[in-house]
Image 1 (cartoon, rainbow, N blue to C red):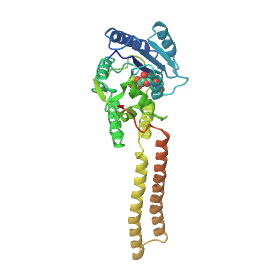
Image 2: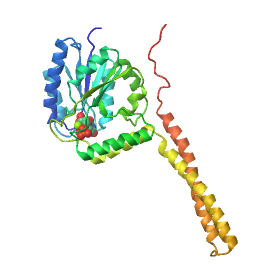
Image 3: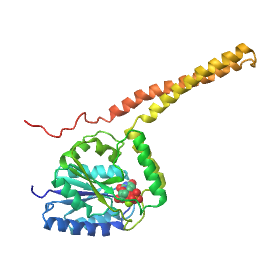
Image 4: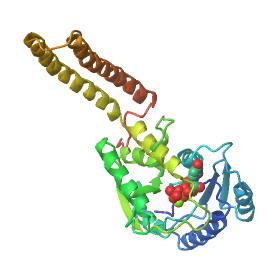
Length: 315
Ligand code: UDP
Ligand code: MG
């Protein structure tokens, strides 16, 4: 196998402090990989400026000028981490043999990329970078992250434990991913849907090299909510279930009410009120759930996801 053209996609949002350090590390890394013929000399590092408000774009233009290996992509507004990755991957897809996505803050160990490419050479189409431990995380981040994985599992969403968005995709896996038509994207839930041969590479995750986190709590919660609602219809089912439960309770309540009525120790109007509250409440919840089921179907349809993804075709 000839050395593959690797495109490294890096989303950057207000990363003027981290970028120079990151760029230097990635230059050294790719220099070494090229000289050892692990990757082709036409490999690229695609820096996507996600509508930064600081001097990120200036830094990126400077890097591009100094070294043609750096490509710059500037998004017109802050489209968000997932969309920035999508933009970079879309622009890389035509020219690359494989793509690796990595954050701009070098929290993910770049040396794991040797492992990624080794797995790729061995035939893997999707290689997940997985954190070997979360010891360096704060207690808060660790517990919320674990809770998140557990919740997603409960929702029937298949996630790779302790894997974020540090991964390698072969050209065909990338093309399959890009054929997903959804606008609301949660990449780490979508990639496992692709299938293909996968592998995992473990690495230690460090601290951010410079600057501060671009994921404050508010964005983290929004991100988790996106993960649930863009991949699962389960919350709608729960409404339906809750409605059915209320109806059942309503029937039990009706029996109780009628018995009390017959026994004669009720206040006037109590019986009819009680029954309407429970039965109507349950009915309403159930009706909402049924409507929700249809809306959920419409939602999934509008994603226009491919019905199948071809792995091989012998002809
Ligand atoms: N990022 C982005 N757009 C955003 C927020 C973040 O492109 O709106 C990028 C950011 O520059 C970084 C990556 O997404 O490369 C992950 O962000 P960060 O490291 O701040 O998240 P954390 O590691 O703190 O969860
Ligand atoms: Mg980070």
